[in-house]
Length: 84
Image 1 (cartoon, helix red, strand yellow):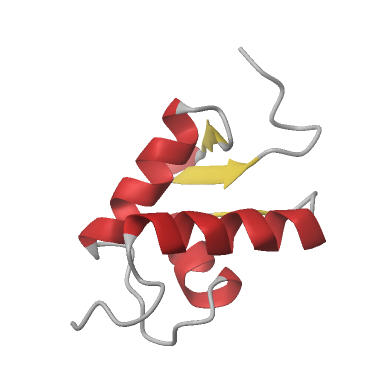
Image 2 (tube, helix red, strand yellow):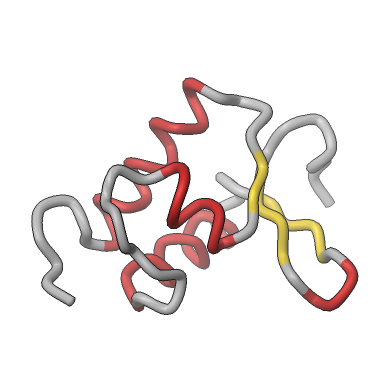
C-alpha cells in the first residue's frame, strides 16, 4: 500500500485526534477506527503506521483501551475510559 498524503504515523494520529475532538465520546476497535474514523478508504489495522499511531497514542495516554471478551481492544477516551 502506498503511504500517500497523511498516511504516516503522525498523519494518522492527527486524523484520530481530529475525529475525537469532533466526537469526544467515540470509542471503537482498531478495525472500526481504520474504516470509520479516518478519511482513507481501505486502510487496514495491520498497516504498520496505523498500528504505531494507536500504540503511541495509548502510551502517551491520548487514547485508553478496554479489553472486550475475546481479547479485542476498544479504544476511546470518554467517561468509560477512566485513567488507571
